[in-house]
Image (cartoon, rainbow, N blue to C red; front, side, top):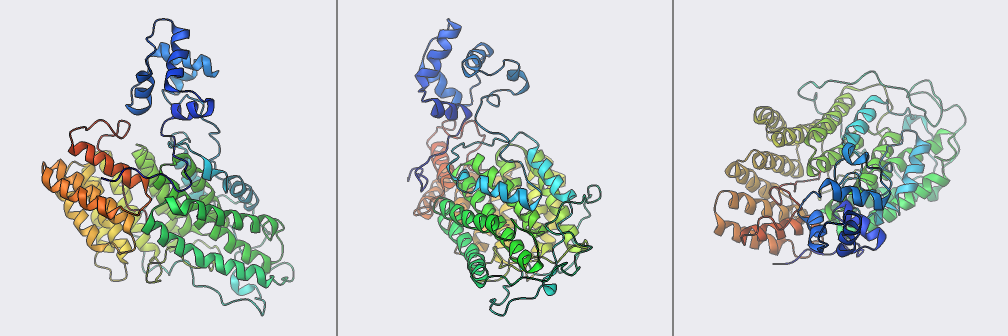
Amino acid sequence: MPGNRAVTDGEQPLGHPLSCIRAERGWTYQDVVDIVARRVGNMSARREKAWRWEHRGVVPDLETQQALATELGVPHALLSSSPWPAWLPVGDRTAARVAWTPQDCVAALDATAGTALHDRRGFVVAGAGSAAAAAQRWLAFAPLSWPRPATVPAPATAPPAPAPLLVAASGPVPLPVSVLPAPVPVSVPVQRTGPSAVPDAPADPVPPALLAALAALEERVPALRRMEAALGGGPVRAVADAELRLVTDLLAKGPAARPGPAAAELPARRLFAVAGELACLAGRACFDTGHEAAAERYFSAALSAAHAAADRPLGARVLATMSLQCLSAGRPQEALAVARAARAGLAREAAGDGRAAAPAVTSATATAAGEPSGSVRHSSALLMARQARAHAVLGQADVCQRLLAAAGAILTPDARSSADHRADYCAEAAACELALGRPAAADHWLRRTLAALPEGRARDRAGTLVLRAVAALDQGAADRARGLATDAGRAVEGIDSPRVHRALAALWERLHGHPGRHGGGRETPGRDFAMTAL
């Protein structure tokens, strides 16, 4: 069976805060226990103890923690308010805060592109509730009021306008959702009386070179998304980050740094949208390779850019990935809150909220056939399925089933829902059944997932085979599980997705009778794998 692959750039994630501390200070496991033994005086200095703290989920006793805290300069009071390992000093915990003005967004992008790529912390850094708080602020803040494209005279040399990011909603969003307080005004690049107001100064021509570069960047995003779905996050992380750096530099030097006439603002809005797409893609690639802290930083930058672009569907898709990360980190309540906020934002998008039309950018969620990703209504249904999964993890089977049925009623009979949508819905339903301890029902949905998955999504196909093997093993069908694990091993060849490789390695350990050797204390390896094409 193939082992876990290294990330393309050669930087393996550090899966525990203590491993991050050791890497920063050059400590070995033996150094850690020696430090504790010198301060405590009655502890056997065996390196295996420190290894278990990192890899087995073992919690050191209070005296040991106090000795480490003294060595690291951490106040002992923090040990009770932030239980192990949260109190370990692992770097800046504020990097994942969301900026809400265009100028602050550019600064956040500048602080993320290039630096987040080398953040090796393989664990979430932001405190519990931070993702939900960001989602609620995104929902409460009114989108920026950009001028409508029709009011902006286009230069004669400009290329044709690309297709809209999302097609129009085909109907009302099902199931009413609660909304937060009235939208809060935010600063905008140029003060206007409304979304359709005319520019307050004559429009300056946009340099043709900028428009050509912008069109090329918009065309690149769908290709990078297809590459990530086919090859995994490893090969895409550095590429997406490099292109995000380019977009950030264009924003910093161009119209976002000097807001003014509307002709300059329209490219700025499109650049913010591309930045949001690239940051979200880089975050997903980091999540796939186990770089959880880096993923948090990219997602925050992506949400900020989506807000700066006044693109609520993009913001909802960023929140969908944040919700998945919360689920993987064992925060189902927060995942539920984030998914609810994303759905509420899409409901406002479908109802219309008096803002400018969505930016005219090329769809970054295009299918392999080049079609748009689907309507707001379909995206809302997938978020409903994500909510169902969070309820399943919380053991709330009745609510989970109601949400799944409502989402399925939208996606299953609708001929306009794409194969990607159907596959993602089936995968979420399978994850619900696994979380509820119903492996036979999960296998039914996993088979439907494989039937719906487009050929280009090879990484998700391999992950689905792993989950089928997990479901078979949970049913006591060891031989069938071995066959499926072998199929998954073949499918994952050539795919640089450490997340899938780790799940497959954990599955083989279960098959060989070592259920506790992998996963740092996770209950069942592989169950946190889910589709991410929303």
